[in-house]
Amino acid sequence: MMVYVLKVNVALVLLYAFYKCVLGRDTFFGWRRAALMGVCVLSVLIPLLNVGYWLERSSAAVAVAQNYAAIMLPTVEVNAGASAWSWQQALWAVWLCGVALLLLRFGWQVVTICRLNRHATRQVIDGTTVRVMDDEGSPFSFFGWIFLNPQALTGRELADVLVHERTHAAQLHSADVLVAEVFSILCWFNPFAWMLKREVKINLEYLADEHVVAVGNARKAYQYHLLSLACRPCVQAPLQTELRYGDVVNNFYVLPLKQRIMMMNKKRTHEWMKTKYLLALPVAAGLLLVSNIELVARSLGTPAAEPVTATAAPAAIQPATLQAPSAGPSTTSGTAMPVPQKKQTPKAGPSSKVFEVVEVMPEYPGGTAAMMKYLAANIKYPKKAIDKNIQGRVVVSFIVEADGSVSNVRTVRSISPELDAEALRVVKGMPKWKPGRQKGKAVRVKYTIPVSFKTTGDKTEEKPTGNVAYIVDGKPEADISSLNPADIEHVEVMKDAESLHKYNAEGKEGVVIVTTRKTN
Image (cartoon, rainbow, N blue to C red):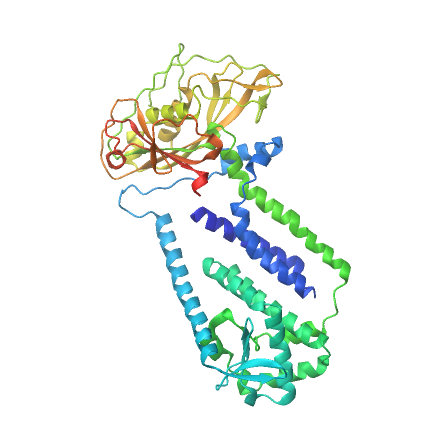
């Protein structure tokens, strides 16, 4: 959820910047209204849309996703204490508190307006029913309700105000205001959300002013009325109206009066300039692609798609040698970690091409479930790294050769020598894969695996049982071989005593917690 909120705010910043730079200076107020609502809607929807299955058909998109998985995936940071809050949890709590407080304020403002409507005296003026206010607050409207004090306005001024507020009511401007208000509440920490809300209200005033002039009122006379109204007590109290009814109403007196007059006098933008609104399509498409890059990497059905977390209690897990069916020796330089014995893969010739994506992708023997079990059973948290409280994600790149063996194993994102060596050790110890195939021939394919390391506060001893328990979306599962890798959002391997007890997995090597996209 936190990732989704961040994506929404990133999309908001980029889309609002596009609006201000490209669309924010023309006189197509109706189009601008649609564009502003589009910013809100697209910011919310784009992070939810999954076009990974379509992008998988593009070799270029998959190559970008592979590079993203290798380099750009963020490091996982987890506090060592089992009961301590992480900084992500603290941010989440702060965001929720802010949303809750602002929602309470918003609800109170709506209730206040409804109470005012229920108790206000109705009066018909020029065929329009208005709610008469006894105070000198600024005239405003809320959907079809118009609130004003007729005694504070002259005949001509009252007529102008009525036309203005009727426009707000007829065109349902309050719906835009409410959308912008709710959006600013959900993104309260983002200043662009508040700027967007203000832009929505100002543009609605432009629309109403344009309609007042269009129905036959002289532009200059209307502008003079606005200036004279600015000096009246009835509109010198916008703060009183704001404090009482908040930002959920269409207030007649909006502060940038100078901008309103300048916009009315501005030369109308040529109709052909509406074509620039088409530029929003590639912008939205680009955001959709960027938002789905990680989803594409996760949906390739490869180890690169599934980050696996190894959890250990401090001072509990010691380095261990992984035994793999192999012959010749292989070493990892610069480490004191035991390295598995593995058959050396002959070096590929100069003409051997390494593919990023092929028609038939390589597969770990036994499928996704077997790969998870292998990783869960063999990842060992180095004691030296535990003592130093070193945590994070190591990204390992390797090549699945045409004969299925793993070669060219290297780190493309390093955390520490100890964790790097452990990740390399586990990957190098993998058995032969079912090779990938292109045009019917076995070929070399590049993969990346992000391996995350974190610590918890509870002490436990590992049990050499070699089996694990599977928890899929919170429910125990005996077999996950039928699980589609494209449906997997995250995999976490827990080995501490608390987790084993929590999931009734005593006697198991660990607990593999799988979260699928279907629950998000």
